[in-house]
Image (cartoon, rainbow, N blue to C red; front, side, top):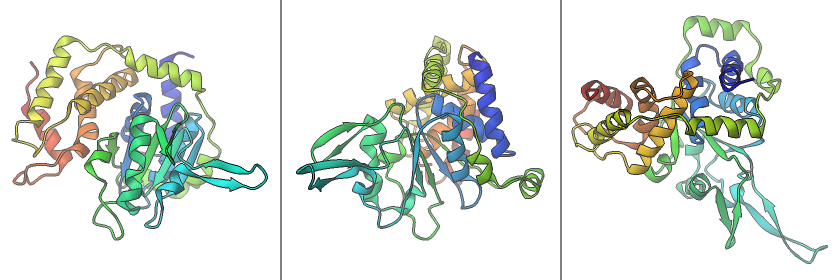
Length: 306
């Protein structure tokens, strides 16, 4: 089975669980193939946790789930050393972060201190516990879900942590036909439990290498730089994209191109992935009257293709 067949199988299986959300499912697959962390933001009950479970199972990855709450401590994630009387020494008991996929459910219900404990893990793929640095499994992904900031008991994620997420997506309510299918069909949680892994670790590595091999031409990079410069102009956002965010955007665009069956990045790939990749990293200017995603789309319309 070649890369395109594997990708089609991945998307097909995920779309049987998340009905009517093919665009968001494709974004999620692109994010993981690009080696990035994923943030799913929406109101409760629209399928955020179901999608995260389905992604981990379909990709064949070992995962753990942590329900973030106000009393969750950093050591609850990373683990602790406990004195074992039989061995007469302290033995490290790894926490749930030592998994290939960490599902951080309702991440913004935990305190900022606990949220910050994920920073090193997300960026460096390692954690430091009691002065000792321990490597995390490879691959390592964080799939986090969060509720809108205006809900009770939520804490806004710090900008430094938002920047570690390659993409932020929102599922939204299903349309009428998709909701009818949900009402008539099987329980989605039961469906997730019966999903079969479609990739091995080696196959995932090959797909990620295929993403890195997707060609980005000089004119395409010029267009990307024009978009990045527009974010820094002060017209659209209070603060523009960092160089790290620009590199992340190119990785996401390469993954989007691979999912489209091409071995080169087109401007359409950049435009399709731009809101999900950069909107959560920036704050619109105060007189914009639009949210960050709408502001990014307006910026795309204003920046010409050179």
